[in-house]
Length: 340
Image (cartoon, rainbow, N blue to C red):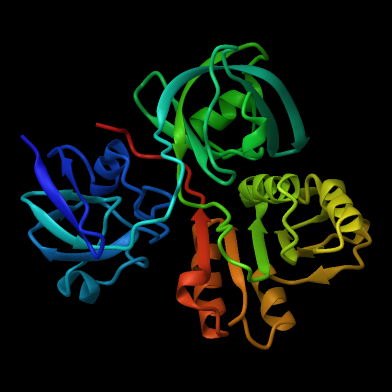
């Protein structure tokens, strides 16, 4: 048994099983709906149910209001069809038909960058190559059926060796295992790629990247991919961290700014220490952006980090003139849902 999901305005249709969210069913069908976290946290998949009914699973209440739900809005990453649907949400124009797949990877290298950030390099089988767009993410498939999602930090032209940045979550089963027990040459199973956080290359607007913590990972991949392709759109990279040590790969960002005249790097510390001898910007990273621009109307902005940071930044940036459809985000959550 399955339900037919018809999309407006495109008119495309696909089938959804009763156990699938709308986003999961669209992914299986090769339909590119906007989504990010798949946890009901980032709001990227918000759209309208024009006809039919859905069951909405757990979500973060700040992302969608009760009033919006009463008016037919929902989060398609958490919505399960209970009958045939007509929904309104804009499809993404992705030319390469990339579909997620499950494959084994070998842990080629583990390098601890800070006290709570680990660089992991994953090698694909020699007979396999992963098609992805810089900025997308993978899900690690754990033995108990749980999943953990991490962004790919490498550009797509380096698809045989994937770079992942993991932040240690106290009490986090997977990250504590990586930091304390995992050995190089370990074999893991992953599925991907997922996500719509990637550089929109059809625009000529200057780009603002805003990264908090390991939110730098997908942005690193996007910048490296843009360099490899010879793109010259002006880029301002704002990175937020608590103390100087948290600005991992700071030298790489400085090198980009030194070697490429169209790239500017602005690190911001919120709680710098006296031993940091910090002479740079201070405060919250999104506030640094607001201070630098009277209006964001002519920019395209990509933001990645903790859900609260992304939510606050979104409201602040759109209030400062950023067009709603020029804000692209990836809100990091600790776990991806178990796929049914």
